[in-house]
Image (cartoon, rainbow, N blue to C red; front, side, top):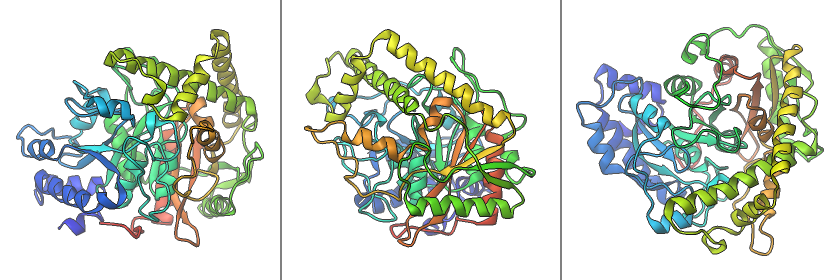
Amino acid sequence: MSGDLTTLDATAQAELVRRGDMQPIELVDAAIARIEKLNPQLNVVITERFEKARAEAQRADLPRGPFRGVPFLLKDIGAHSAGDPFHAGMRFLRTLGWTEPSDNYLAAKFRAAGFIFLGKTNTPELGLQPTTEPEAYGASRNPWDLTRSTGGSSGGSAAAVACGMLPAAHATDGGGSIRIPASVCGLVGLKTTRGRVSLGPGTGERWSGCAVENCVSRSVRDTAAILDAVAGPMPGDPNWAPPPARPYGAEVGADPGRLRIGLLAQAPSGTAVHADCVAAVEDGGRLLASLGHTVEPSHPDGLAENEMLRSFGMIVSCSTARTLDVWSERTGRQIAANDVEPMTWAVAELGRHVTGPQYVHALSFAQAQTRRIARWWAEGFDLLLTPTVSEPPPLLGTFLSPPDDPLRGFLRAGSFGGFTSTFNATGQPAISLPLYWNEQGLPIGIQLVAAFGREDLLIRVAAQLEQARPWKDRRPPVHA
C-alpha cells in the first residue's frame, strides 16, 4: 500500500481515512518509511518527530478536519509547533538546541485540519536564499537531478513532496520562496495575497508585509483545500485580505470564463532569461489561448525599475538585522558575525546602515509602485503570465557566498528570482505551475499573477491547465 500512496494527493489520502479504508497510523507509518528510505540521498527532513506523530495518529481526539490523518511536514521557518526544535536554518539555534513552547496560529490551523506533523524541512539561513544549502544542515538535493538545487527557501519542503515522501508540506514566500522551489521541483506553489494567512501571534508582518505562508503540493485541489483550512485573519493581524466569495475548493473545476492575459517572457530589467524558461512561458501562452483565453504581450509599467529592487533589498536587509536582534534577545546571547553565515551577516550589516528616513522612503516607494502596477489589472487585464524563474534548476553551489565576497549569492538571487519578488512587494497572489520540462528532463514552472485578493481566479485557471495538461504522473528519478 505504501507504493500506491505515493500516487495519491492529500485529498485522496484523507478520503481513504474517511471511508475507513486506512487508519491515520497506517498513512503515518508509510510516510515515515519513505522518509527513512529517501532522506539520506536528499537531505530534506532535518528534524524528525516520528514517535510524536505515531502517538498523535492513534489518539481518539485527532481532529476530524478535511485532512484527518494525512502526514505533513513543517518548514523550519514560519510555522512552529509546541515542544519541537525550531532553528530557522541557523547553526546558532541548532547549537543551542532551541525549541518553541507553543504552536503558532498557522501550525494550530494545520493541526485542526487533521494534518499530522512528521518533522521539519531544511531551509537556508533565515530564508535568505533561493536555494537550500545552509551551513547548519547542509544542502538539500533535487530529486530530478541530485547535482541541482531544490530552490529556496522552501526547498526542503518542495523536494520532500516531489519525491513522494508525502503529498504536501508547509512553505513560506518572502521573495519567491514557495514559487521558486515549486518551479524547480515540478510542483504547485501558490503565494497568497498579503494578509490571507495569519503570521501570528508572535509576528504581525514579516519583511514589512512581503512574506506570506501557505504550502507546496502536487495538485491544485490540494492547494485550494489547504488554503481553505488555514486562511482568515486572527485578532490583531495588521493586514486583512478580502474574504473569498466561496471556498477555494469550489473554484477547482469552475469555469474561469474568457480571460485577458498579458504575457511577459523577458525580464523588463534586461536581465537575461534562459531559452528554456522563455520556451516554457510561450508554451503556456499557447495552451491558455487554446483554452479560449486572449493572450497578448503586455505587462504592468514599473516592473523594470531598479529602484523597486533596491527598495525590496533595503526592506529585507533591515528585517534581517532586526531578526538577529530578536534572536539575541530571545536566547540571551548576543549574536556575533561568527554565529551566522557570511552572507547573513553582510545583509544584516547593510540593514544596520539604513537610516529611518531611508527605510520609510523604501516602503513609500514600494507602495507607490504597487498602486502603479495594480492599474494594469484595473484597466482590463485578468492575469499576467511570466516565467517563474529566469533559468532552469541551478547547480548546487550557484549561490555560494564566500567570506571574501559575502553578498555574491544575495545579488545573484536578484536576477534568478526577478519575476517573483516584485509581487511580494505588491502583496498580490501568484502561482507557479509545473507545465514544462526541458530536454534534460528538468521541470520549469510558469507563473500566473492575479490582482490583489484574487486567489479564486488563479485556482480556476490553474485547475483548467492541470486538466488540459496533467502532471500528476510525472515522477523524478529519485522517488518513493
